[in-house]
Length: 107
Image (cartoon, rainbow, N blue to C red):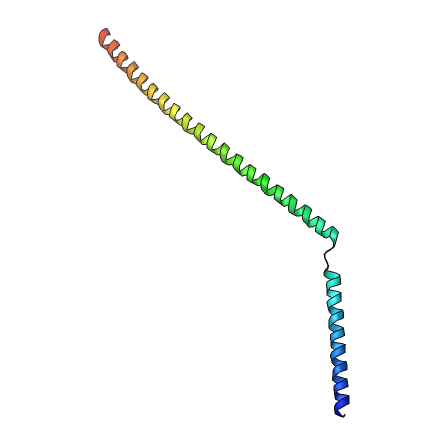
C-alpha cells in the first residue's frame, strides 16, 4: 500500500465514522425531541403545581391563625376556671366560717 492509497483509505474511514456519528446524533435527537403537546402538558403541570402550592400556603396560614385563636380561647378559659375555682374556694371557706359561727351560737 503506497502513500496515496493510505491517505484515501484513512479519509474514507474518517468519512464513514463521521457519517455514522451524524446518523446516531440525528436518531438520538429524533427520539428525544420534545413535542409541542408535551410542552403544553408541562405548562399545565407547572400551573397546577403553582396553584397547589398557593392552596397549601393558604391552608397553613389558616391553620396557624386558627391555632392562635384556639390557644387564646384556651388561655381565657383557663383564666376563667382559675378565677371560678378561687371564688369557689373562698365561698367554701366563707360557708365553713358561717357554719362554725352557727354551731358556736347553737351550743
